[in-house]
Length: 183
Image 1: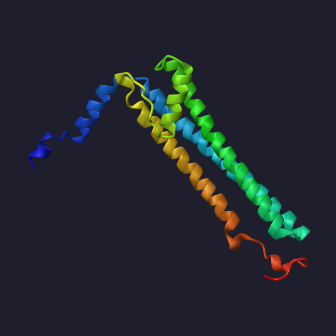
Image 2: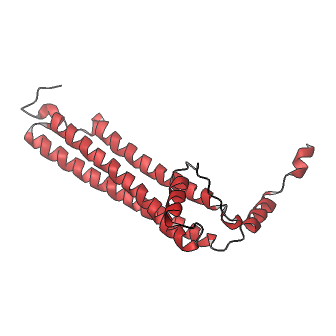
């Protein structure tokens, strides 16, 4: 129990962290995180809406053509692959946005170092040997959290899209087509 006497209160801990940061620019970074995650969420939502529109169009056209099973599956999985590529591009854009948010702060001597730092922190690899000034040591945590939340949004969307492709209840009744035998 004597060990507990050495632990600071939560209020004291955050006061110490705030004092250690000592950088008022971190508030702008926090605003940027909110805007970047909003942008990413809207982007992922638009990808899902486009995917669902293409999927609906495919269902309608392949049901009429009588080639639902084979043509729809191939086209739908191609659309899913395109959605994956778009989501990956969205994450790359997030890293580029982080780079442009960090460049004016002059934390790193070169723009490529800023890009590599943003990328490593965003995907939480963190194996680089970046020396940050005392006031910026919170930055990797902030960037990593933004990457984790953005990846969570993307993962949920991709999981939902894949589920719509393999969910039998959402498929139209293909046995009603004259050209296909009943299942």
